[in-house]
Image (tube, rainbow, N blue to C red):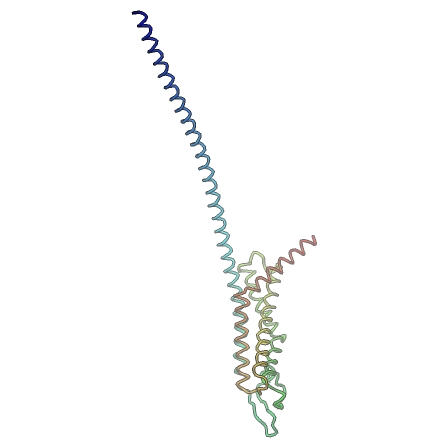
Length: 275
């Protein structure tokens, strides 16, 4: 009997030990799982923190870019305002001059003389403008191409250059004293460069327009004798061509401002190299 009881007790002890070992194994597995979960949570928290920091950096960078873009856009708008103002001041003069030349040309009287020559009478300024200095010419020596060449020569006269320089100076004084570039001032290098470049482009566009008209007239109207309507047409076409070229060069292509930037950069490089 006692031996049977001892056998049952040993059997229960073995079963309890097995159950105990199983429970310990389960607990150990759960502990490892908990540790793994805690590690992953810590890892994810670090990743989230890094992502949040990166996201904040991205937002900050985007804000800086947006602010820079707005500043650049405002700067560009201010620059184009003064550029447009100077353009219309200069080309308004060209338009007014073209109208005046056209009205003056309409007063020119062209007569066919009995000896076969062509006689001219009219305002001295208009005759000078179209290079018609004499009172009569042989038809073979004076055609519309010669009159167009006179327009081209007048575009390079001192008065035209001085007017363009005056307009450029006035616009840039206001711009560098009270406008967009007031931080630099009228004594700055940039002011001098801007004034000179504006003058060069204003005179250059006028010369280019007059030259284009002269070439076009020479090609398409060769041998055509000067007449009052032809003189009016040449004056009008030259003025409109100058305005059209000015719009393309100044406003569309933005060449004057590009030339100013390059010139200032080059001067700064020279000054920096000399120090």
